[in-house]
Image 1 (cartoon, rainbow, N blue to C red):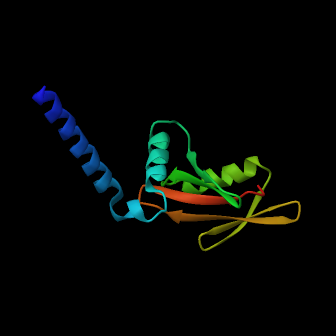
Image 2: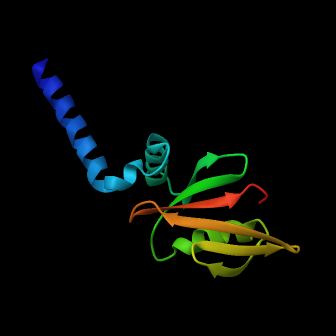
Image 3: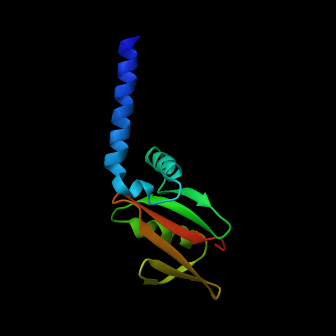
Length: 122
């Protein structure tokens, strides 16, 4: 019985250490870090390019992995909905559709993941 308890405690310590090393100080930069960690787990164990973090009355926030094709993820997302890329201004990407303009904002969460927000009008 003691051996099982020691194994469980050791696994928990290893899991907490892994989370601390992987996310470091970025873990608590968001309002709901547990939701972000849950979304990271969903993203890691799926074959999707992005996962929905939250859906508010003004926008939807998504999480994606960083990499060589990071920008293509939300460019494809917007293109699938009929929006055309116009230009980039800092961390904002401007898209047009039928005379309307919408801005997708991005920001790094950690060196492995970034968060992007899409207005609900999309």
